[in-house]
Length: 379
Image (cartoon, rainbow, N blue to C red; front, side, top):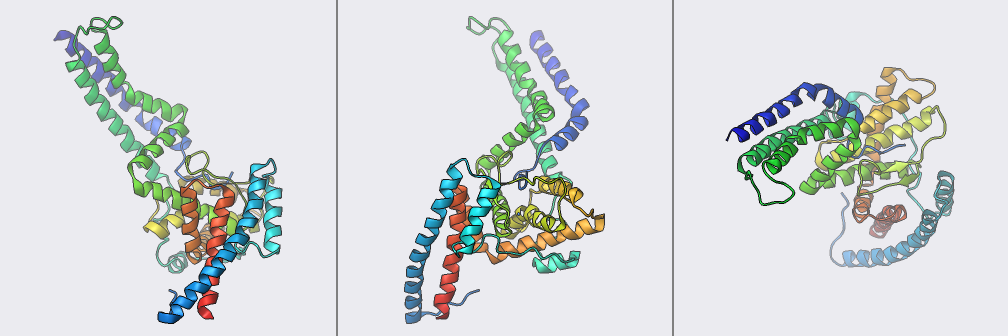
């Protein structure tokens, strides 16, 4: 009994030391981790019924097959380029521009970035109330809340499990390599050290810790998995429509390889290109807001956008930077809302882990189908 009490007291003393390092550690984790979906940069039709409806559906069906074949031929060329060594920014842009000039792509670089000043009230009005002041997590509070909950869950679980181990593991198990009290000590102190392992990961490999937490949330929550897809698809579609080629994306790793665009080779950023970056950076959060009415990601998106704002030339003051970000929100909302069917098709393709070329195929096919449907309905 004395041995178990001593073991319990040592375990409790070990756990109490955690409180001494919480403040510094959480601060380090906040600086070192990134939010899910943050790698965006390195964004009522009436149908007649009866006989007219059957004619319309036949016309849509025939045009759909013709358009799909045409688009697939185009995408097959991109897939050859994607699977080769030539998937570079210049080659991708040249290929997409060439296909657009021949009217084989309609959505690539189809939206001009026409900046204008936008007030806070206009943002709410133009986005139909979906984008508000509290939609964006500019301080990382959502990420810190997840870290806090995860840490205290680890701490309480460690205290409970180590106590149970100290009380119920027998003193003399019939194990040749763990004799006497050694097994109880190893298990008890191993479980009691879990909070320190959590803090150590936060200090040394914060990205790995964040990745583990995201994978746990993905496994436990269908809504969270859907949020990640909408967030990354928002970046993908807005970047594509604004003429920003996608370098890579991964549906499995939202921390390290979400949607990535080709890096800018210049140290300074023009205001015209900055407008594009503002729309693409805010597109993930805006896509979440369109689907769920709020957003839980975006802290790292805005942190990266802030670095782009600092690199803009001529330099912008604080008021001009805020106006640029507000315009980016409105531009992203307009692109995504007007192309919501293409966005859903892209999300479906990304959920299947399709290639970049196949994602472009999903976007262009849906857009062409919608255009043909409108023409057939009008006729």
